[in-house]
Length: 303
Ligand SMILES: O=P(O)(O)OC[C@H]1O[C@H](O[C@H]2O[C@H](CO)[C@@H](O)[C@H](O)[C@H]2O)[C@H](O)[C@@H](O)[C@@H]1O
Image (cartoon, helix red, strand yellow):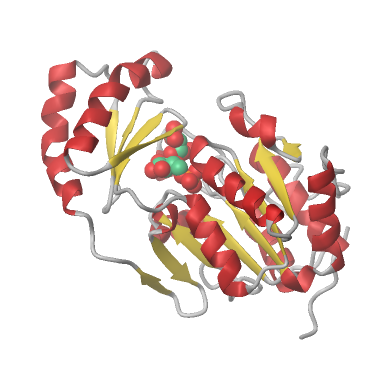
């Protein structure tokens, strides 16, 4: 490994990233489709889209979402990889401004063209302009916001249950309750009813139920973005239920002749992605290793 401070140098060390700087070999995908996807990515990196979820994939899970930060090696690994591929995108349930802030994604050499598809693709941040594009908010969110505290009171939601204000959505978290899973299950039905009454849907996640507008998900966001840039291959990495539509989008792209790789940022909390992934890595640390290995395997683009 080198000691370069160039953020786009894939051999640079990650001084504050635990073991993430240790060179890791590229994994061999467990499936034929995954191997085809990785082969295509390596053969034509200038057509490759690398898309990643934020919480649980680039950012370790912590009890307080406000304290979540990208893994210390994540930005450097992304900055090393981005100049070698067509595009790097973060596809997240977070508002894009929050993901950019918590990720440290702004003004990073190498990430000049990073795209963040936030709120499950409803809002978009482009590093090239620093601007966010967003449609008008859904009126049901205000109504839900007004009713939610009273409903949680009436339900006797356990201590530790709290509501995250997300602007165009609200998310009820139970990670800090004594029994997070039981608290989540007790809230699922009444929160779903509340959401439906106001034209919203419930997005379930890791100890969280988010009440948000319908009509967009990570699959739609990923497919539209892949089409926009003319991606010739797609690698998608995620950890949570909200990433399943993106997995389905990669499957659909494969059926249409665009090879893809499904990466699971593994955890004990969610098993659904692990079962479908071509590559399973050990949480955000494993994702950083994978990104670093990809960057080392690819030469910088010259076009
Ligand atoms: O699409 P993502 O980037 O994975 O965002 C999904 C949700 O992530 C956040 O919650 C999750 O991470 C928190 C911080 O580590 C953790 O405390 C919580 O239990 C997880 O569910 C975020 O707070 C939500 O708004 C996102 O929808």
